[in-house]
Image (cartoon, rainbow over all chains, first blue to last red; front, side, top):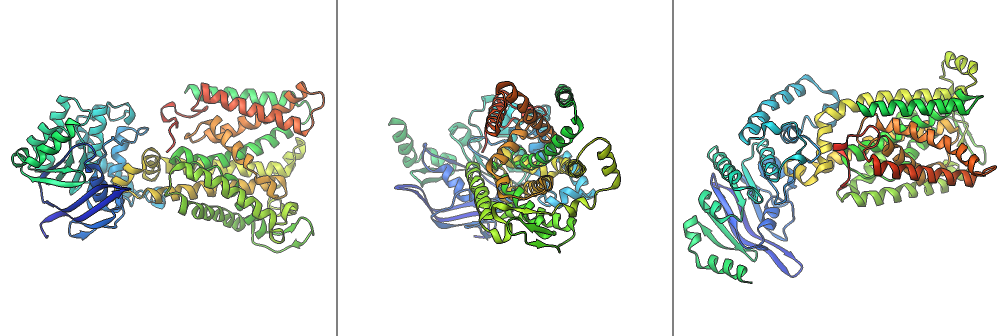
Length: 256
Length: 348
């Protein structure tokens, strides 16, 4: 238990008659890239929503970093270091790229109404310090040139990068990426994968949902396969690749 | 830069029109118009914090204006309309105004707590309903609010503080000194509030509100409490609305439930749209343009009808305001001072 960063037990979620998620046991060990794959409608995103507390589960328990977070607010969970991105990219369209990053990085204390009204010198200093980290992160993601553009002017791939960059401003313990490569061109995909594995080397845990199997197999240390709400296979990429259950699930869904 | 030139010309033409169309008493008409414009402008600044900054759809601004007005007036010496019950003791006016503003903010809290967890459209519905409930309540609680007869004789608390030079100046230009004083205080408040708001808009708090406007889920995913931010914004805008309501009733000299009808809210929205949603000075500018239009509808009515009655005047007024808003929505949806890039088309 102690070396699990994230630990999920008998987590269930139903939508009417559909059992969207039914996961008995899922543990995340420290510092790995774990990928969650499975056919469409397998419950991957719902599973993401449940563990990040964007949706309430019907039953089950979730603990993160040694704390029981089963009924914690999503934003509080994010403060503990579990930061997610979304399948449909969510950037702040009518704010500049730089402001997107500033908002992500600024402290909750500084965003207090009174502190913002008074604007002490420490608040101003902290805002200045933020600049350095923002510039570094934008540099890493090749977004420096777009710094002053409105986020909605970015290309789809660049928006994905911005969303990732924004999450990094939170210095997360674990990053949950929902289809980070969707709609991203091959060249940018390569780049993104490299960034992701570098982040992992620097101590950030990664859990991602991704449909690009080649990329998943290349980058992941562990692959978890979901189908019809359940985890049907879990292990090293090579193990999963040859697992009969997995082949059936995928062929079954692609044949229909 | 271009938009400021447009704004300048619009204002210049408007003011020229006022003075040319009123050979006698141009100054009086001007002060009357600018006072109302200031009051509506202040109210629009409140809605701008809600909608322009945070994306909250508030269609019940009249309730915030009303509760501010009623609270303040009831705390100072006044007399209830029908029976003429005179209450001659009360709090000092500045304190009463402060309590009125706080009351408006608290009404914001009360309405916001259950509704701000919901999506924008629900808030719109709840605020319309709440404003009507408020109006009907104050109409029916006759013992406290004077019912349909309203509250009168409270203006002295404000007018006693009027400096002599205002009175002298007013007399030499044939202006109502009482209205001049109310209008002046309104515009001073606007300047002070805009200074505070410009500071807040650039602050981390203002940035957080804009993030909420753009995408609440993303705000949550980044560890920020979106509901708290919305609540704070809602209370701030409500408080500003409360202050504008206070000036509104001091301008009328009476408080009546019928002042706080839904159309008041929609006129304030019209001013906001004309001026530019999201911009700092837009709401106040929009309110001036709005009132110039209202004033000019009278002469248009006289052109259309030989001697227009109240109903005809009101009808022409509605048509012209409606046409103008349509015109702006089609040709300049960002208003006069708004940024095209920050245009709010998709409300969440």
